[in-house]
Image (tube, rainbow, N blue to C red; front, side):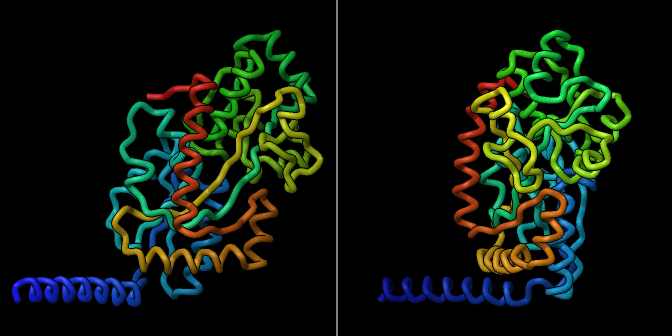
Length: 325
């Protein structure tokens, strides 16, 4: 009798929990949602967040506020998201830096890239382009390597911040090409491009959105893309790998995450809505025009992807010799 009562009580507890979880999800969202972007406005993460946030607001009738929290290679914004209440009202636009590179690049992080979050969905990849100031003579990757070797330490390369894929791309370039270019970190892609336009730095491994308009007007010179294959965004540009550094590859990806402990039903609701948003023709066209390829995944697929990418980038970080504290 005691065993039967215990099983009955456990069943009631589970049913109560499940019903509460379901009711909570049905009521969600009933107030504004915050989507944290760990970089300043102007870069692909911010563009993605605003596109998704706008559609969420239209679909759910609740304002989706994009909150830019830049600094420390995305660490500051990611920590804020990790420590937020797990109620679905705080989301993070995570990316390859915050959730695959930083665990190997930093000796200590204020969050765990796996345990501190519930993955919702992958949402996009963004092309990274090697651009330099047109006052410099190199017109190809091979010429840049030769030029850098003749002036060790003189060339500077900017990035959106320490630990970003763009920073790591430059460090990997240094290692594989046998050159010494000095890294200059900025708080985002847009400030790095601004200093490059002013001739205060030599070159930038830049995401496409802030760089392409200036390439089109001749204010910057594009040499190559860092992906393993040519990009549909800039099909005329070769890859760094085919231009003199075989095996060179750095890609940028983005995904939405929520704090660990967020109800699975809420994660599922967010996943379904985001999948619908990134498949909309107007959203895909808008993002494609600035070098972003939108897509979606299941939450489980994103979780596996993060683990695989963490292992992959640990090897790249070790090979490049990059380290931050």
